[in-house]
Length: 408
Image (tube, rainbow, N blue to C red; front, side, top):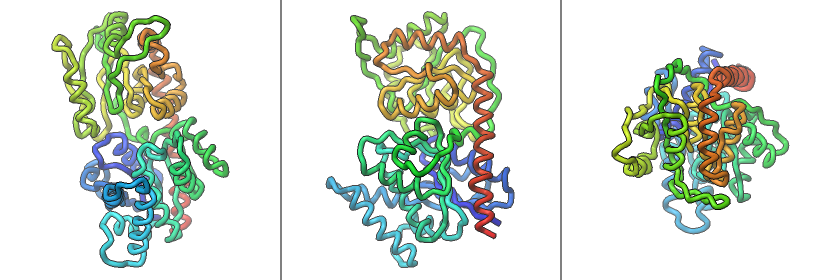
């Protein structure tokens, strides 16, 4: 019976990380019901209800690593964190006392496994170093224990500094197989690790069954979906255009669609961990704007209401909308967002649905109206299903077969 360890950042109140792990575990169960699964996650208690009871849960190294990082305040923080983490890893491998549970438990889970699979995530970049530290420590443990690893469903980059790209390159080059979420990340992966050839597989959360999309309201409604990193600033004027805010764009879109503006909160816990920013947005909504029911997290994902068009800055909300057949305009206000969002929308054959502030607010309104008039829901649903099939085939070829061969 093959034993597969799944490394994930699930359990941190982020619905996308949870769903990527749940989708991967579900697909592996369908491919090989006899496989034994153990999930290495930062907070096992928070994810237990989303997985089958026979999926064993252990704590990941992230919390101990976070403590190490927080205790170091100098410019050499990254190097010191790595050195201390490697020391704890050596103690765990040798069975010494005093090793934090997150490191000890993850090492033992890998020791008993036939393959380590990194199950999705957007942390292979310079934005969140703790995610790369966590992944690197698991890879070091796997290398010492001679357990192969594979990466599945990740975004990669962008990188402006060499240090984090070197860490990610080691993860990529040491993997037996690499499945990347979208084409731009695959290009980034090849640029820092030319010797490997990643496959573009899509997001693992597409492996979670989705409810059928309901019919649109008789009188169309427009919804602006807010998530972390949404920029509240005034957008720069273009060629004498007056200074406009995102609120102005909302009014323009709603007026041209003859739609009512309804405020719907989508970041209520436990869907996301950006409650503070969401409360700032809530305070900016005029009393005259009607409020709809909050979108809640459920085992099947974050279900969006039937709408005419969605406008969002979050990769995760954009993916949920596209996979449900909803037209969406992605607001890309940073280099990191542009990288991921453009790759995602190219995968779904709608690159023109990504908007950047340099284009001007009137163009944002034009794109939103065009998307609502030409939503192409059938094609979006078809692509989502094709990607899910591609991922199952990839997992069978590179994970279950490889783990079974090693287990025998």
